[in-house]
Image 1 (cartoon, rainbow over the protein chains, first blue to last red):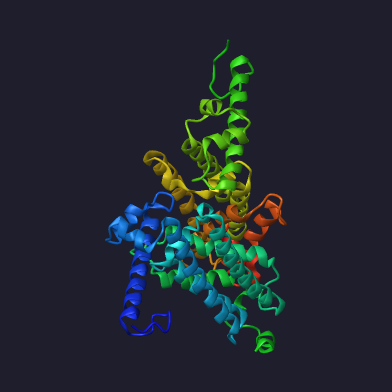
Image 2 (cartoon, rainbow over the protein chains, first blue to last red):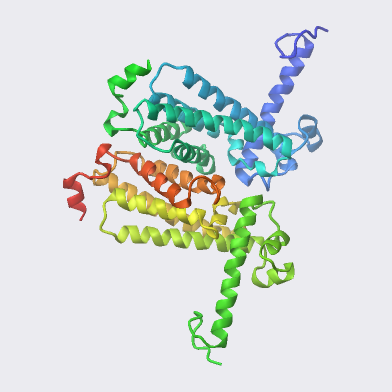
Length: 224
Length: 224
């Protein structure tokens, strides 16, 4: 049996088994996401997650040590995705409005995605210390990145003068809160929510209002 | 002993006792608020709340039946205060920007107040059904009121065209989230946070940007 790599890319027996196990883990995370959303993290139990994932409880424990580990993996997946969107926005040649709008949209879609939605509850107080610390550190990194986008926009004159720390927290609050009220079968799709949030939250930073969609030439030029 | 009224306004023995008990209950709510904030609602226990309030656990049970009742009273107090601010804004002669800014500021100050801050966690999933329903109904009423302010501003041309439901939720998310990150001994006072939120969140609705502080005469005139 070939065991050259650990990334599941080899299509021998081991690779197939690994990929199948990964897919099973993602199904479990999706099921856990639904239970967390329906019942709240505190009230959700492994038995209920197992039932939702159509597994026996003992089989569920084969994949995850417990609810805390599931919660932790959910959070890490979503933070990874959000940090990726932030990196992409930073590298892009677009102006500050467009970059922030991209990050906002990616954040909403990540929160409302069936799997990562679970992370929205952000009830990490209950996690054991090393896990909690790791998630808090990544979350802080994300927050610093968003704050940096805003501070850059202010420095370039594209955004109105403001306290970037407080505006960043307003934005993250608005975005994280979506997971509390969004229903997949509600009046608005996740994409509509994402667009609406991007429009509204970026407009609040616009230095001269109407300039939002057509950034001032001098500054836009300066940044490119 | 005179027992004419139930509002504690009579300065006979009964009135004094009632007022003292009320004051004690408020002290307990403040203590519970600190424990909820420090530990999260799920992890907080009556024993810890009692210690924080410098009471024996059995004495604490003399004032409140349990953690759920404390949480419920916290929520009701804050919702009452927020609904009051909303009523006042509605009755005022000010323009839509100023009315919304007033509501935003009142909401933040309510969330970050030592007592009502506890309500911020909004972990009402754990409350028994009749209590939960009552709080959800009042919260919905508050949300409808904020949405109404925004819809009125859009109709009057003071605010940019938008989906008031989604913008309202963005605003409430940003405001409710403050309780998660605010520290009384942090860099910004509650009043500074309130002003910053009002500036940013109202500007996001501004129809023509610079018009924010000087609403267009025609519409402002039309509303007065």
